[in-house]
Figure (cartoon, rainbow, N blue to C red):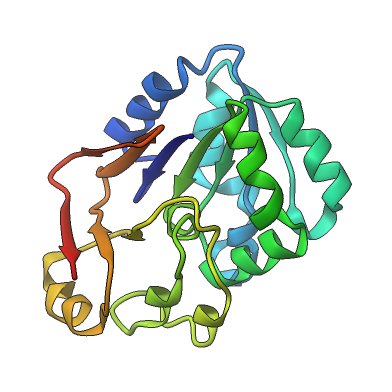
Amino acid sequence: MNLFLASHANADNTFNDIEKFIGGYSKCKILYIPTAMNGLLDYGPWDQSSTYKRLLETKALINVALLEETSEEQMNELISSTQVIWIAGGMTGYLMYWMRRRNLHLNLRKFLKEGLFYVGSSAGSVITGNDISSVEWACSDSENGAGVIPGLSLVDFEVFPHYKESQYNEIEENFRSGKMYLLKDGDAITVKGDKVSMIGEVEYIER
């Protein structure tokens, strides 16, 4: 699998690191999933997001799919004809609900094994783990009830995006077991096959 898990994909260095990871934006077929932004009106329209606008300025071939409006069959067809699936940030529980409604928790792994690149930003990174309950914490997004929805289980660790050092004690108090990477904006985790690499000064908690 080829996964790029960012705190904030539009951070200058991160956007450039993604370009290197996927082999360049020019003529790259990217399927952009902005569904997480629809989970909260405060985010504004997804097509006004800075990341989406920046992607449009590249020479990438961008297709957009809203999970709320796209069937499982349509999603499979779209994914099969793309090189990169880009899961944007927003409300993690809302995103994971729709990922499961479209059976992407079952179907996505097959496409990744066939060479599909996965780019996650914020919520799009969080959902790759087994457990998304960290978004319920007060130091995160306070998404009450989101943790009842399992993650995609693509990786054997958790991701905490937009990390600030002032949050460390509360994270340490709440995190129970496993490994969690704490990503500041500008940090990222990459997964290539079995190799996990860190970009930036990434901290982690392991129990």
